[in-house]
Length: 219
Image 1 (cartoon, helix red, strand yellow):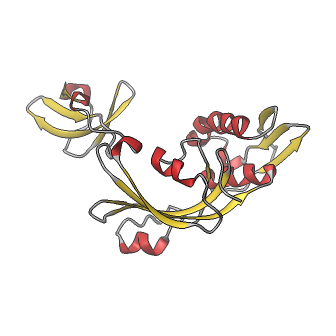
Image 2: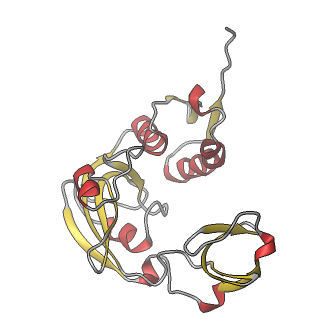
Image 3: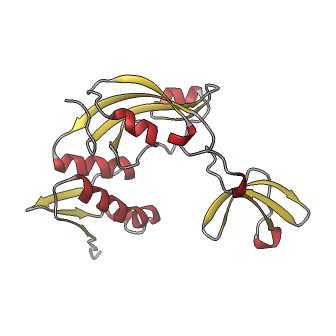
């Protein structure tokens, strides 16, 4: 069964720059060999909703028409990744806007925008607000491990793929009920992403609503 738009697929992948440097992978051994291993990361297949911008545009488009078990490599140009670098996004600011001491390569935030310190000269700092991967052609080796069919499994896999924990999920007459795990009740990422996840489910599944339930119990 070929992959279609809005399918929930399980993939493994490795992303490289054109010089061969690995910047991301789901393979633990490749991560260790490439000196990007993170002991807090999970190295396992993850769930992508095709067409939901979970990955860069060029890779997302390449999934369409592929079958379970497909393994291949695709080279994605900047316009299908993070865009070309824009000189106008490199701007100068007074160092007095920052409390911490600035150094080249530091990530900073101004007016809600994330940027990278390029250099400091006296009381001025040059900050690059381009995406760090802007202008790069990226190469992806990927395998489509599975296509998830059942709506309940789609939701559970998507949630676990994002938050590394199991969720209690029910579907009743087109309404999805998601019990928020206690360990995530005060998790900032969960608070920020759950609305986006709900919208993705509403757009990808034949459902009426998504409800999140928080349960607090006495000691």
